[in-house]
Image (tube, rainbow, N blue to C red):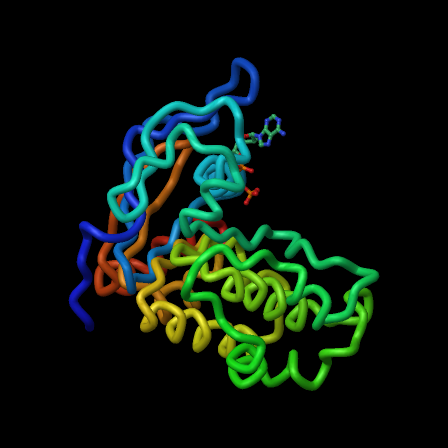
Length: 238
Ligand code: ATP
């Protein structure tokens, strides 16, 4: 496994978030180094989506510190966090249904110098090259997920926040998404992946955080995560 520089990348300290009076995140601390893939695992309602949204600055009621490459993002609005390198792929994938694949890609604002060219995207995502003129409405779930990831890479994001990218997809597509995640991390991007599929998580990630009722309750290296896979299956109700 490659060495990871933990000074670079995403650092989260004491992150709490509320919906009105209800606390959804309670003092979450985590880090994702440049080139690392880290998963966030937890039951439904544990706070995973809220955490990604809070990192992007999409959740207003929050407290705590978010830094990327040493830069404090805590007080920045969404577009400034995106410009600082954070990229989010929501669980609904956010594809514009009435635009083509290519239009969806071209619409992404390029915020960083490391933004992927269209050529690189089409080389890596063969299915998007084939479907470049297809409308968003006609894409399969796997194609939508690929497009959503490619669109963020085009912006030049250096942190990729993925919310359940494999949900509902066929095994062959899940495998391809795993290959792409590793490729992106090898390029130095920090990847934080919300994932319910424990088997998939163990094939792509270096480390794992287990979230329960808005708190990080375990932090596991992948070897330990694999050893405890059956226990985690049971815990997650899979
Ligand atoms: P899932 O996998 O089901 O999406 P999750 O781990 O992503 O679960 P969140 O969606 O972040 O969990 O929810 C965390 C907590 O916040 C839950 O108790 C949930 O009921 C609550 N919550 C989420 N969205 C809202 C909302 N819009 N208004 C009020 N409470 C909410």
